[in-house]
Image 1: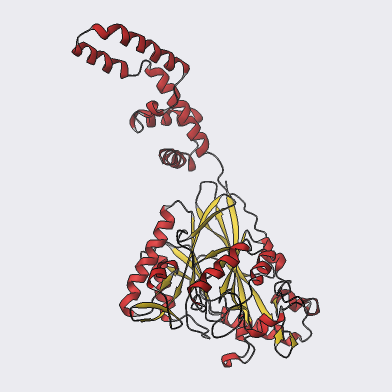
Image 2 (image 1 turned 135 degrees about the horizontal axis):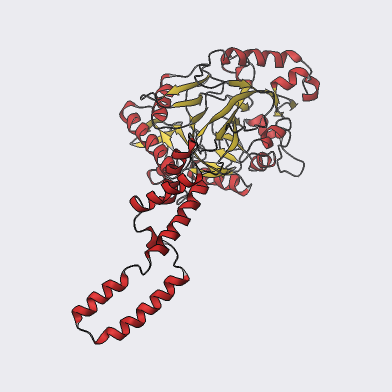
Length: 485
């Protein structure tokens, strides 16, 4: 902590000035004298100090016959530094190293991305059945694989469970565990598992989902085993990043939290990250999420991200609860939010903290990524087939300040391909690229892609972004950070 504070002090002196090297060293020495007294005692001892201590020990043995008071005085004398110039020299060198570190270029960046709901209905499950009775889904993200692998960190929302047979879609989802392997092979790193379907197959199904994802080499977030950390943290290109998630709950049943009307046993409630929409509990839950955000920051993370399973199904605008919780997260200093659950795309906005000092980027809903919800589902006229890959690049400048350097989205379309009366092998299509060459993406009716592009554009026309340029990408960009002198 002392080293970090010293570096920051020196940076403040050097950031906007042309102080000479000698003057910087003078400042360092003054810091030694007035700010860091006693630091010399904490430095490694030089050979001269070791020798002086040895001589002091000999002297102490000689004076053992003296009186107690003389002995006490002698001990005090021996505990004082033998050569203060050595200590000052050591500290000067140490703080010169701090000054050198303070002048290092800390520039770095990373790009993180997330797709929407991976929602496996019956037809999707059946489409991956192999002759030997196993399942495989390499085709779903065939066209997005290069984009996923160009991200420094790629995430998806696992809507439902990987809880084993009998496999089923709505209303109690359980897809084959092989799905996790397919997602890992395409380059995904993390799945969020906190949703209104987390306990569709009970607590054992929740644990089975965690195990399936981890066995495939994926991280999971939102549900956990006893002893697991409450949030995920990692370093991306040297920048410390923390990610947390939470799902809305349905009304309590006999005092128990419920998900889609299924009570969660009290003894495992703390293993699922949730928040309430009931007035009696929601403000406490907002405070709980804010405290989580503060802890993530206090733990030394430079970027704090939340993934919220929230909103009204099939609504093309954020609802009041989404706005309320978004404001709470902005007030807690969260950097950005990816939203899930409505099964349709919702606008992208910035939310300013109440004190006006912080602006948080919010993707209110990334929509469905892959599902069996077709053009006519919920009378949404194709919106359930549209999705976004949210893409955000965070930048750390040479002085250590973090900001969003670039942000945007890549529109996607779920092309539902029937391979049997009760089976589909759907593929997720990058819309802008497919518009240029539809047949390369298995699209033989360009109106499908044109309709998706128009629907998404209409939603994006409601975006309100302050202080950032939001871009529509045709592929994941390779961000080049240019440090300003």
